[in-house]
Length: 298
Image (cartoon, rainbow, N blue to C red):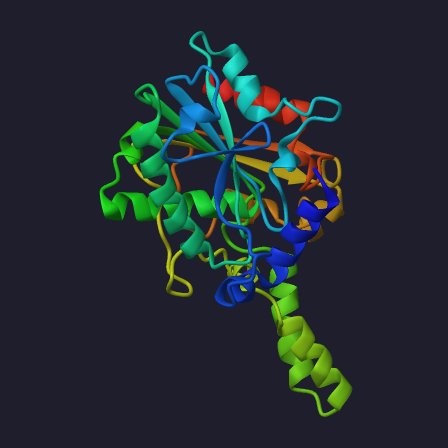
């Protein structure tokens, strides 16, 4: 992936909401990708060879690109292709690329509408839809499900599995720390400290949403998991068993309790797995995680 694309993803993560409001071309549009090629929602057959009845969509996290899913030395391999290789009927895998600085609920609505158009024009009827999200991507999935159910979208009926990989359902400790630091610095009497607080506070709506894991327009509103769908959670831990660093930092960005959604109100998960010694980013492309996901979905 070119450095220009990576720079654009980072800039969008920080100020993507502002870029979009200004009509700036650096604001990434939401697109489905297949092997780095944009898939037209109205005519996916133009970019997808041999489309399957099982469709897997991978959704990256804050300031990431779809390249985060790639295994080292295997640019065309990811969790979706690993699952597809094991299914008797195969599967088509797409990656979502989007502006992570937008509010999560806005990206959720856009994804819900995009999936409705995509599945409506998919060359064969989609019998099974699988959504996998890394970090913020898992929150976007939950938001899209809420929007899709509310809009009566047909794609929700095809949805069978959601996999949340290192997703901060109850918020990220780092985002919470940034919010607290900005508030403290802005309240101090020194001008330079207040300026530092203002700079920290110049963060996108997407980053602000990660403070509490907000997926709806109203701050602090809870939304349950969409029913009649299997939901799976993957957690990472920096250290090995009983290492105190795990309690302090989780996978480096997300605590295990937040990845599990323990404050969300009694989720009924179809599966849950924690991986010691695997940090936040590597959760998106690790062999052990791939094996677990294949075991769940095949």
